[in-house]
Amino acid sequence: MSGPENQPRGSLFDALRDRNRVVTSELAGTIPRGLRVATAYAWRFLVVAAAVGVAIWLVIQLKLLVIPLLIAILVTALLWPVFAWMLRHRVPRWLAITISVLGTLAIVAGLLWLVIWQVTRQWSSVQTRTVEAIEQFRQYLIEGPLHLTAPQIDDLLGQSLTLVQEQAELLLSGALALGTTLGHVAVGALLSVFILLCLLADGGGIWRWTTRLFPRRSRAAVDGAARAGWVMVVNYARTQLLVATIDAIGIGLGAFLLGVPLAIPVAVLVFLGAFVPIVGAVVTGALAVFLALVYNGAWIALWMLVVVLAVQQIEGHVLQPLLMGSAVKVHPLAVVLVVAGGALIAGIPGALFAVPLAAFVNVFAVYITGRAWEGGGRPSSDDLIWTTVPRPRKVRS
Image (cartoon, rainbow, N blue to C red; front, top):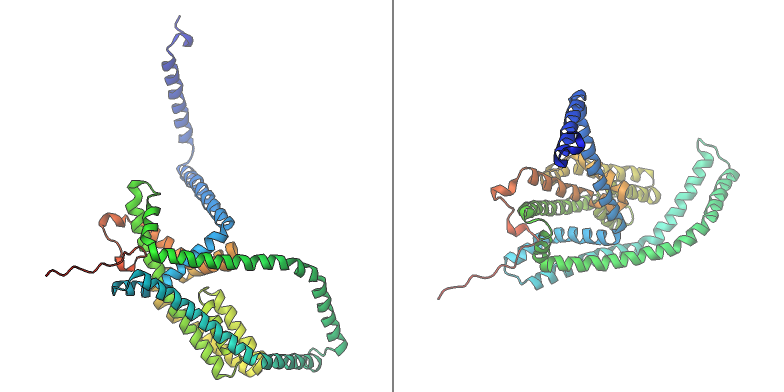
């Protein structure tokens, strides 16, 4: 007898495998090609989306470590042009680090001192004018087109006070959370300074260790792509610093000439807010207009609004396309979408780091897909964080 049970086991498996192949081939022939291609893209997209989702979840869970790391990297990119210039001119690395870090701290401390000095000088006047403005607004509600009566206004104020009292317990319970947040901010600031010092002192060693985590065959590609991405981040930081300075000078000078109080604090807030694209400019500009409305009246507030809009138009139509467009290589529409997505995912930190991260990913991906490392083209070492200390040449006698 020669039934299937008497056949060799291997030949039976081969027969079943061939049969499955025939069935699969016949089934595949009945599925339209477009559906097969769409299905192939779909499951790969689901895998990529799942990987990205897990990565974002891990970043959110480790935000107390990730945010200081990103802040330190961004500050390093801001300091790198000056730091690299000192290295090129044979300044010892330890001295260059000291000058860069202490100089940055001195600038920040000076700005904070100017803000505190002007706030203490003009706060009482601003408080008085605010009370007067509120009273004028009250009279406008009574005598204006709304024709509200004093009891109605008092009733609205009483309802507002009741709402505040009802939320008092929530505010008190949030005091502990606020204290925890302040503690996290302090720890994050110290961690950022420590990471900054490590990056400036031994960025090359850190990067060489990082590249060893990748397979040997892919190290050249990862190294070249990261180098190109880092140069892009440095260009972004340098350009954003210039744009923020121009915005702060324009709006701060306009507030000073119009007699708006707290012109220096407004300029400092505009400078800091400019590092958060779109959102920062709108919020800080609205604050300047609000101060002008409360302190100087509607006419000066209108002129302050003109100044803010003019500065923002110059930034949006001149500075960003000419400077930021060439430095980051990211379309303005992509900037808006990336900032909005970053803000939805991670709030203010997400909006702050969205553009440099998108620029880095864009350059990294273009470098990898273009296989640029095979041509041997890499950014100049003077622009890289892993630059070593230039050694003086020996002079032959």
